[in-house]
Image (cartoon, rainbow, N blue to C red; front, side):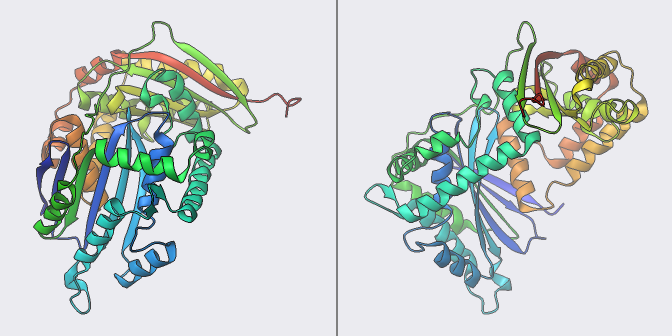
Length: 424
């Protein structure tokens, strides 16, 4: 591979990573604000981030911002809000073509860098309050995002199950907050949240391009030098303890298809063995859950497992008819017992290994995949090269997979049931 990377510290709470790969024809800058997911502040932080990525003092409207991006050869600025374990992660991204592809040699990177710095440090605000017009637009967008999350029942049921699986932990909350919280926000308290985010968040900055651009790091150093930050450290990994007795929660909603989530806590810390176990059990089209629960027995419309590395938790989510809920639950647990007993073939092991290796090979296909990979290294506290990551999967043994499976304990059963017809 032609890629290289360097990570330096702008301060104790701000990291800067430069990722270089000669195949890229664009430059991408990402700024990630990391804070513990607080239910009382999540919506304010999410809305503040959205406002930052929409306008600034020099580009005060969507129309002016869009025109500026168009003039920079279709540059793009965006924001994402996500949850990683107990953390709320707010990521601002700006990207554009490399300067050497500009028709007249314009300094495109300088221009997009300045736009990003203005968005972060010179927002569209007056008198400690965001611009009211832009606030109203982005508040409605956030409400629409929450509605969309509710309407996506597969995602919604996982979020609902998380409330019980991670009870009394930050991971139990939505990274967007609730509609009620969003409706109670004002331009003033969202601006206050922005200042708090700027001064107290842990920050990771990424530059991805084809060649070194040291002035990008220097620009961020200069911008942050005037701030007396008091960042609050975050924990990327927090183990969620298994309940003494599994809890069952049933919620009735007007849905066409019942859904069920089984939450498991995993005590084995051999990451690669756990991931291989999860691939064999339920994450792939050749897994136990897909082949048996879905295909052979036709108990579910879908049935898949996912391992949440940051919480040492595995979830199985499924879409199922009401009359098949108990049968599906029994079979999902039976297939886990099969893996625990070592009842899987060498071919299944190799299929899982190839799936893992294919995922590793995909790292670097896009700037975002590089950033995600390096961010994973930071969150693990240990950075592997892509070759080392592949080797780790190659070295996982059958015995390690069985051991990982036997560390899996059922914690929560969440069922979203159809309402009775008389209630509908």
